[in-house]
Amino acid sequence: MNIMIIGAGMGGLTAGIALQKFGHQVTIYEQAAEILPVGAAISLWSNGVKCLNYLGLTEQIAQLGGRMDDLAYIDGLSNTTMTQFSLMPLYQEVGQRAYPVSRAALQAMLMEEFGHQNIRLGMRMEKIEDHGSCVRAQFSDGSIVSADLLIGADGTHSLTRTHVLGEQVARRYAGYVNWNGLVEISDDLAPANQWTTFVGEGKRVSMMPVANNQFYFFFDVPLPAGLDNQKAQYQQDLKTHFAGWCAPVQALIDCLNPQTTNRVEIHDIEPFMQFYKGRVVILGDAAHSTTPDIGQGGCQAMEDAIYLARALQINTFGLEDALERYQNKRNERTREMVLRARKRCDITHMKDETATRQWYADLYQEQGSHIMQGIISNIVGNPLD
Ligand SMILES: Cc1cc2nc3c(=O)[nH]c(=O)nc-3n(C[C@H](O)[C@H](O)[C@H](O)COP(=O)(O)OP(=O)(O)OC[C@H]3O[C@@H](n4cnc5c(N)ncnc54)[C@H](O)[C@@H]3O)c2cc1C
Image (cartoon, rainbow, N blue to C red; front, side, top):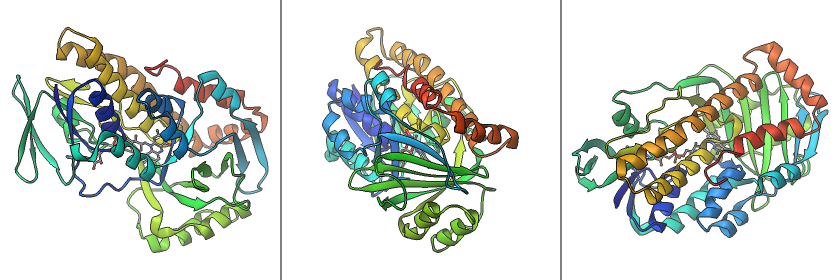
């Protein structure tokens, strides 16, 4: 088939690589003239890593991934360790390590694998027309492109989603702001091979290792949406939000580079079940937009991509049949992930103070198995298991 993909994010590129491997002619159209990742890094849980392994990228992704052996929660004010344990039992159960990776490095690796010559940058899709025997997209430069199938991997503000659903859906503000970036690993911040999270007051500060001796860090603070967003103010704002927190948190604020730090107001979208219409199908954030609280948005985009490519490959009752199978397989799982992330988000960010304080108390009793079981339950059920 001749397939056009809208969006060269991790979902669109993974789909492109998989579909090319199955012999389709694929072109990706991306609105940005230059791809600038929306965040500094991402934790690819084992299900996301398996999608890349499936595409033959096992060595490449292992090289980009940080060595995250242990996990710890620490009281951010007193610096008391609440729980600390090895993640090896989790990795052994699911058969693959998790890899925190720099987004820029992941993006570059996926683009390289797909082939730069088949990515059209600076092409903003503005209109979709489904003609039954083909689908046409119109771009901001006036050009019109025709294909057998249009895959909307155009992210949380997806235009393709509006076409598929026949209406625009509103994003829901999750109630907190996230600052994220990369810093050099150093002992005064956290152990180099550990995912360390400081919690307190419904806020969180987290560090996980990526390749090249760097920590991916993020700060979460419950705040109203629409506040002033000035890079020059980031360190001062964080000093205010984390006043009285322990030395490693202060050291992290001191050493971060505000110019390369991102500030994001976190949203999700109420899950819906329709993922295709005619010759148009959506995947990734276009189909299910989640808060990052269980680190599954990008992993689910990759799962969608693999499942869609395989549905088109192994079913022989036509396009509509394959798209329906894709939709019916993916909408339940992704809905569950959005709702789990929302629940986790509310507990972490003190939507209900009693529930959050109970979680802090529970962390002191945690030996690792409960947290790991939660993560495993997100990983299993992926299309490659
Ligand atoms: C702070 C934060 C932390 C996160 N952490 C994690 C994590 O640890 N693990 C995890 O798995 N997920 C995480 N996520 C979620 C993850 O980033 C997303 O789920 C993932 O990027 C979705 O990929 P995508 O390809 O669907 O969309 P995107 O990455 O958003 O890509 C969409 C692309 O489409 C392009 N586009 C949009 N409209 C058009 C148009 N009309 N024409 C042409 N091009 C268009 C955009 O420019 C963009 O390049 C996090 C998200 C946030 C905000």
